[in-house]
Image (spheres, helix red, strand yellow):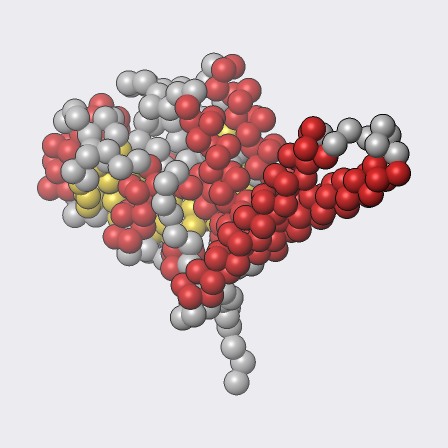
Length: 314
């Protein structure tokens, strides 16, 4: 069974058209399917449209939030409600073409667990495409998951991924990265990107800043989520070492001043004293935070396996 999870935020004009396109192309695959619309606090008639579609098509279900919680929360709710073994995500603005569904299924049939769309030709202004290009290259470089379009909302997943990958904040664009960190196999297909027909984009300049901060979070979670002291402690040790070297130099010059007072100024008048003390304090803080993070990780992870068994032989 295939599930389509579609977060919705003020897209009332698009929903009926999108439903018709999904039904037409999903029926052509010969597989059973369902469509889960998630109303993320819409202020227009999107929820009324979803209710109308559900009354006309038993394969349509709707979830409604009390207010806007963000795309990650909408996707999480949709994933929890989805019944299919394969889960598709699409944006509700008609820029994703359901005609591409067979492409995703063919790549998943080759053994991939996540297939991400790549909008090779985009119908967006330059001030959206250029930051996106920089962001995608940065994500691929930092995480090692090389995709051309991490931001693409058109993706397909095996449902077992969501038993191990938890979404919060705005981490939805990093699901392939989080899944790859758990050992799932990632693929990519070129998809058509259609121009927006109704409404306007819900994303602004703040998305770039949020995306970069989320990238740092994901890098920490995937690289040091089970061993935070390796990062924090390393920074602390380097800072502590530099502070000790500074203090050692100051101690040496203080002894030198006993014989030659004019050679060096008094210790309390030298900037190196402040820098060395700050480095020592910073190093001690980083190592202390690292130890606390290790204790929290050990406590929270007592009953959580950090690995996945794919299959067994008897």
